[in-house]
Length: 281
Image (cartoon, rainbow, N blue to C red; front, side, top):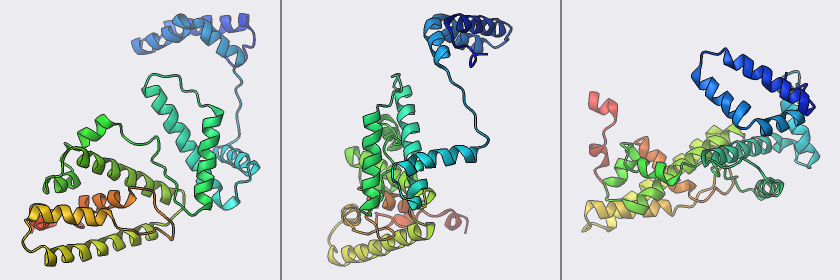
């Protein structure tokens, strides 16, 4: 009905028909939405209809291949097509969703999209893992709520008196590392095995730092020892699958490991945060 309306007269006729169909609906929500489009913003909607061009393809696979062709035309290598496509689509969805949440018109400027793509290509060429967390991170209000949650990694930090901006940064790191880890695996930039090896190396570094602090800080209280251990771990330098990781990946990964109870900051963390099997034993 709308796709064939190419003139103002045809668009007005289509809108009138749509209003008649909606009038028979029993849903108050649908009627309210239809009123916003078909009555309150009729002229804008009519102009959209006149420019509407509906196209269809045979399958989702055809859509995927069409997108890949666009990137091929931009000289993206075949091995990076999926990673590049996933990054761009994810960035667009996140950007549009953010604009809608903040009640702004979701318009993506060409230059902004172009710069994002150039930056991603540069990261891929230089062997630096791309930062997929851009546009996907919780806002500050959500992070503040996270810092007051009952999650284990938050409680582990609170056990060594981490609060305020330091705790907020930890919550941000936790999300950033989680988002990027999953996207790197999904986009086949790294394997699950490589990600697991990265975590094991961080756990080994943790054990070395924990032992060093226990031996060298015999007169220090447990809370201060925990803070020293956290700071030492956040300064660790490790590569993932031979590539440099995004800033704050290592601190964020450590918070995931503490959330999984694979390590802890307070010297008595195992007693303070027993695993479920330990509680049932």
